[in-house]
Image (tube, rainbow, N blue to C red):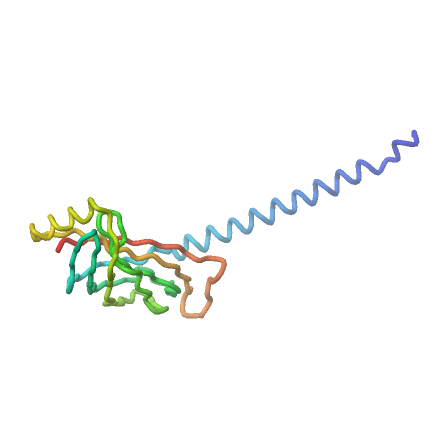
Length: 185
């Protein structure tokens, strides 16, 4: 045996292999548990329906300034059997041809139980909103035709509550959502 070969190198590699194998088994078990929970719960996204949109004011003035006041009625349904939804933050706003024309309305934080339906009726408004010149022309044309296509958008974050036991899958699972509803007025 030389002075460089002390016989302990083989033992160090064996410990390293065992540690690596242990980590690999641990990650496999965690992945398996996550897949089983997902398969049992089968989580589904909430469904949003735009039921009504009423335009109270829509004025385009020169130079391309828009004033708008709209009330929309939005219904959301939780399709999950075992999962409740905490809506932490929901912003609702209207767009016309890709340009936001109202301020974002913040819907208050809400909990939605299993298979529950919730209805909101926010007022969306924008005062002296500058719009692109081509959008101002198109908006005047659509108004004269009597048909206006707006997109109502909902952006937000949700948390999931599993069963009625109160287990909240919180900060680890925040779901960023965006929903779009089209309306012709």
